[in-house]
Length: 334
Image 1 (tube, rainbow, N blue to C red):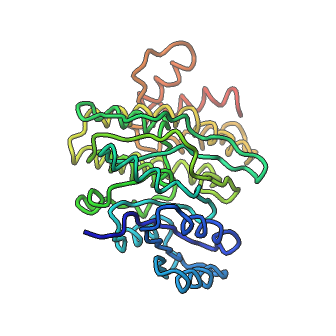
Image 2 (image 1 turned 180 degrees about the vertical axis):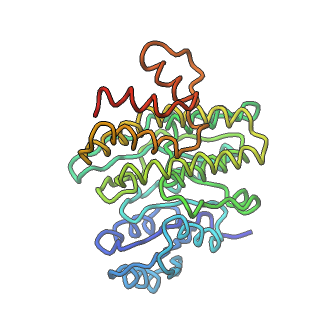
Image 3 (image 1 turned 45 degrees about the horizontal axis):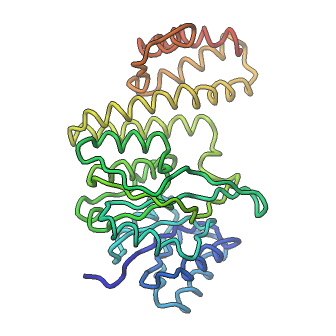
């Protein structure tokens, strides 16, 4: 068995201005039996030079130099190399509290849980931050009700991200769990959902140990069209996984959450994007209807009781009456 307790995978793309802080915070962890896998994803700045400096200074550092293939492919390259008993991730512009890995490792091994997760400090600036999650110190078991874990994940209980979590490497290797390289928004959520299928408990730590840096270049800052497309790809990917593994209850939980998220978050983004194009109302309505019709129709799934105008609009989506839905929305927005 490997004596490396944790492999930390950090994709790096043009991060020369800030990756030092992240890497230094990982190498300074109180848990020293780690390997740090730095994946240079085709950077054109001085990132690779910086990564090589760390590799020369510390034998625990491994640098993988790759052409630009995206964050999912970079993480997959790290997973293929990792030798640790556990897997952790970090983003190059974030950083860890010095005890983060030790705390998560102790929690996971002490409880025999399949995953350990901690609270997160959301960093807007050096002076402004907030706690991102509301975790309690507890072990959540869901062996007999696996849909419970999917529901909590979809409700953002544990965060969609990978960087505040610890994963058993054996499970990832045994089931060949990987990031979908066609997806750049929500690929971490999918990875977590795949992983949850193979475990029956999560240990939560009520300590904010990871600093998540908010910046304008995040994937969520992409245009509405790209975000909707990515949302659709997420939906199809998990449906394929759920069908293959006969996960009826988990699929229902996922589908409800995706429908709710699309209606409450992405449709307003689509409307906002169309309004910026200053089209005639008829053209704007036509475009909205076409954009919605291009999506997987199963996204529109609203099993709760439908009341009033909102309920009527959800019914139109469920029944695939996208043109009528767009016309109704257009009366208010276009």
